[in-house]
Image 1 (tube, protein in one colour):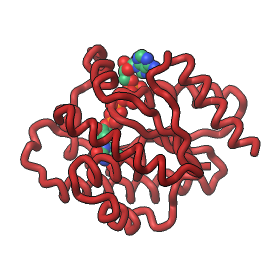
Image 2 (cartoon, protein in one colour):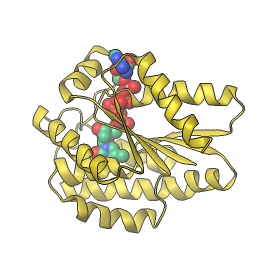
Image 3 (cartoon, protein in one colour):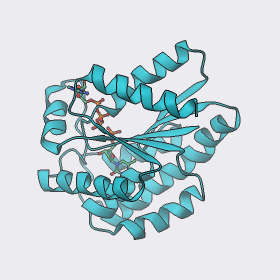
Image 4 (tube, helix red, strand yellow):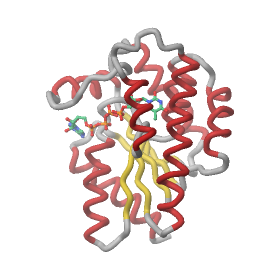
Length: 206
Ligand SMILES: Nc1ncnc2c1ncn2[C@@H]1O[C@H](COP(=O)(O)OP(=O)(O)OP(=O)(O)O)[C@@H](O)[C@H]1O
Ligand SMILES: Cc1cn([C@H]2C[C@H](O)[C@@H](COP(=O)(O)O)O2)c(=O)[nH]c1=O
């Protein structure tokens, strides 16, 4: 199974993904944990370019294409081989991030972004997506409070951009109720973790 974790900045995806992975590993499940953009050498290099704070001149379409290129390489080099060898793949962000950030918040159009990503992913969509819903000001405050987190180029966008990101996610979640499970990410880490674990275990036992 291919499960993706999505949401605005500071929603808690990375923290909870690690906790869930540790727990499922203890149960003997073969797991690959990965992230976008990144997860493998080429895509981590592309990540460096996209998120470099100094790249202030980056065009929105260039940004969208770089995310799609990183996604393609990560998919063929890591995600698909892991799925073919029976692993559960837990991925921090995937194509919904491009729809919400580049499609909706940057204003490039969700359908347009879906079309370039269709070329990148062919038909490989997640079996399930956990969407961590959070007000952007809460998520951004969490990030600011975390001294260990490197601030990237997207973090520096203004609050209106991040509000549009959330609005984009809510549109996708409303349109894809079967695939996307929405959770209230403003709860405590423990409550969010328990909820996500329950959703994933229920899906695996289906
Ligand atoms: N439910 C929560 N309540 C309070 N703090 C939280 C919660 N979840 C995560 N945090 C804290 O918020 C910060 C961001 O969490 P995390 O890196 O998991 O978010 P993220 O969704 O992966 O963010 P990003 O996509 O911006 O990297 C961390 O310092 C983490 O400890
Ligand atoms: C995959 C993807 C990501 N983004 C944005 C979202 C974040 O601002 C960064 C990634 O940083 P994180 O700490 O790993 O969350 O990139 C995007 O705009 N479009 C995408 O497709």
